Amino acid sequence: MLSPDEQVRHAIERVFCLWRRLGSARQVVMELVAEGQKLPRRTVGERRIRWARASYGAVHDLLTNPAYAGAFVFGRTRTEKRLDQGGRVRAKVVELPPEQWSVCLREHHPGYVSWPDYLATRERLRANVRPRGEGGGAAREGAALLQGLIRCGHCGRRMQVAYSGNGGRVPRYACVRGRDLHATGQACQSLGGGRLDRAVADAFLEAVTPAGIAATAGAIRELEDQHAERLAGQRLAVERADFEAERARRQFDACEPEHRLVARTLERALEEALAAAERQALARLARDLPRLWGAETTTDRDRKQLLRTLVREVVVTVNTPERRAAVEVSWEGGARSELSVRLNRRGPERRRLADDTLELIRRLAQHHPDRQIAQILSRQGRPTGTGLAFTETRVRAARQRAGIPAAPPPDPDSELVTIAQAAAELEASTATVRRWLRDGLLAGEQTTPGAPWRIRLTDEVRRRFVPDVPEGFVALAEAASLIGCARQTVLQKVQRGELRAIEVTKGRRKGLRIEVPTASLDRLINE
Image (cartoon, rainbow, N blue to C red; front, side, top):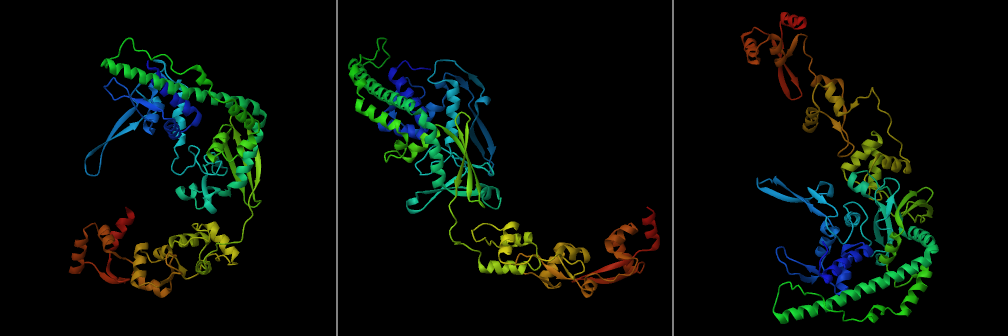
């Protein structure tokens, strides 16, 4: 609720006033520190207020505490417990959204801001935090005017800012999070920031020119209000000092009924300390906003904040073949403007595909399709000339640029087969075929490590790995199933001569094939 102490109220109101003007909690702290404005703090359980230097935690508490919005709430957090790998209980306090609070009584008492303003403050603070993999956040010092406002027209993600050039002052916007975080294989788009920033700035200045006179009056009123607020804070500090001195003299630390801040010690003339020359200079600058925009005293942060007063979002779609970018500016209030920005011309090719990688693509293209080639190159960690991962499209483009023909379609009559085809013909698993290749029992070839094996299956290889077993002879497990007894019993029958058996070789392994009586086979078929 509103404090009965006028100095406390002024300090808290000053925080919310600066927040509405600056839109950043850290910038509010910097402004308060520059003014020398201290904030009231009170330890839980104590009645006396202490004054401390402004800090981010104190400002954030004032902005996010619903009590200052006139609400009584309970259950803003929840404690979650879990067991870690060592079996110890770990507790974590989780902040809940307003709709999940146990109790929320709006307009419970007078507040410094309204409930909608409080919710808007929460959203603004959350938007000021730069999420991992996203752009955005509060306006910062960099030269990129569209930082936090620009969005990719292809995927809808926020575009990131990078700086290059001498002194790192040349901005560039790029949409690379799909490639980096979601393995899309390539960046959506990128473009230089110079021409784009100038185009949007020109549209902004053109949009605000009709409102120049109104902007002048508003700026003057804002400057006068800020001066009055600073003056009021200094006046209340003097009054506080007089009261503290009087209380110390009486040696009494209770709350006296007659406690009133002393009469005003600064005359009304101080409230008019804003010089007329300063107002006139501000009016001239406001009437010529383009000159104000380009003034040396106007920082990049100031330009960004000016831009954000009217521009909500900028959506950019790059058309690489035409070397142009379609720009859609979304203004506050819902209006939209479309711009077209010419992209910079390409310079000479500085990055090209490595010669050994191109030669490997040439050899792989004799037998493998582009998709398999991309997988092989990715397994080997080979990048493209621009440092990107290979995809089917990039392999095809590199092959076509080098004049390398695509692999011919597979010949069904060829003796060269894959591991899966060899496993099917040799009646073995793919793991067994790989073991035969590793042990040298089966001949195969690879164009490069990581490429698919190509195995030549001749009749001699088939005879060696698929033995010629007479009809009626089956493996031990199958014989036990047909006869209806255990495998050990079948082996005992073979030893006693009751069943016939032959020894066969498959690869390096030897095994028995047992002749099952015809009656058992007939019984199995009839069942």
